[in-house]
Length: 281
Image 1: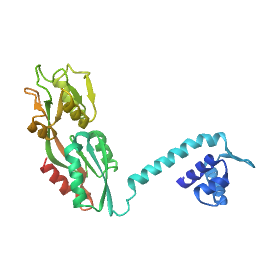
Image 2: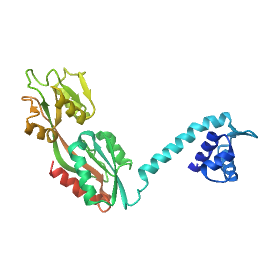
Image 3: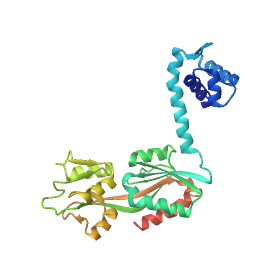
Image 4: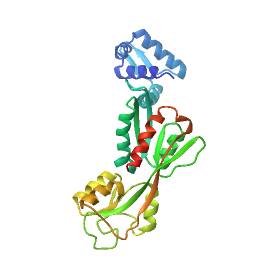
């Protein structure tokens, strides 16, 4: 069904009049009548009761209303995600694991704006499995994740080795991770390793999904938590944080995954700055 028909239907619902709906969607009243008639013929049901007072929904019309709303919302979302912004030659959608945006993918994004300003970039955040599935379904052009799946037609490229270390903003007087420990959700890979090494912390006292918030909390309160070494290093060098001795470290290689046949298109222009950002990490 044409989304224009759904928009016209919703305009009649909102205004209660074919004439007012025509003004709303900027067409003639006869066009509105024709669109509603076409819609009713496609559905095989009457959607409005017509009278001199206007148009009111039938029982079928009320049921169809939520579907029309859903259709328009889906179309608007698709238009935002797929349409090429003015002034750009192409667009790419890139997904990255939560922990990889801070200090790495944000740096790559800035480099890409310099090296390939003609490419519009849309970004998504998620965990490895979900991002890999979006890539397979064609909803992503590039995924940067910890645990890629080997699939025909896709290239997997290692970028760098991520290391999560336990750091503290106060002297540790107990065995790690310590009483003021905050758990940062770095993804399923970290969850599995954390459960193995710290089975006693099944329910942490403080749980956070965003690493940037966790780091801010550490700098403002005496506490400890796991963070990528590349993020913690400047603060360790400044003496604002300290490594917790004896705590296990967790290593996760970061990979770029993309279709093999895409290296000659717009993606080829943003891969070099991605490799550059990885080399500087």
